[in-house]
Amino acid sequence: MTARHSSLLLLLALVAVLTGCGRYSGSAVEQSDQPPAAVETVWVDPEIVFSDSLVTLIRSDRVDSIAADPSATANHRSPSVEVFVYEPACNVAVSILDAELRLVHPLMIRTLKTGFYKLTVTPRSFRPLPLRPGEYFLHADYCGRTKSVLFRVD
Image (cartoon, rainbow, N blue to C red; front, side, top):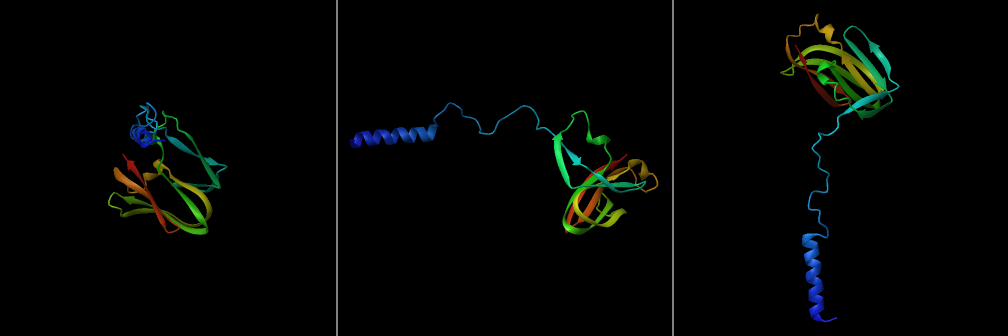
């Protein structure tokens, strides 16, 4: 092979690398006009750990997810916080905090075993609590971690 052929092959290779080999010039990620599908958590064989007039705590060894029903809106759901206890035993405290993150009302302090937990507050039970209309947080401290979920009282 001559030096001229080598230079031509090198030039063709350089052009192929810079321009690409195909016609597709878009992103490798598929683009869509559709919003990403929302998912909903499904609790596999849940058990009620405890329930009273204010809260319900459920536990499961496993959770899964499915596509959410677009007609179901989060505005009509009861405030809830989900946590995963990954230690054999873990102290868990859940409270309601105001918009300035001040304690309004403690809901639960318990030692829980390993598993997935969801604590749901019953909205009609807010009447005896001094919750004025506004934004609040359902706040969980567990296994050295924290999680807060914003909710609104009208």
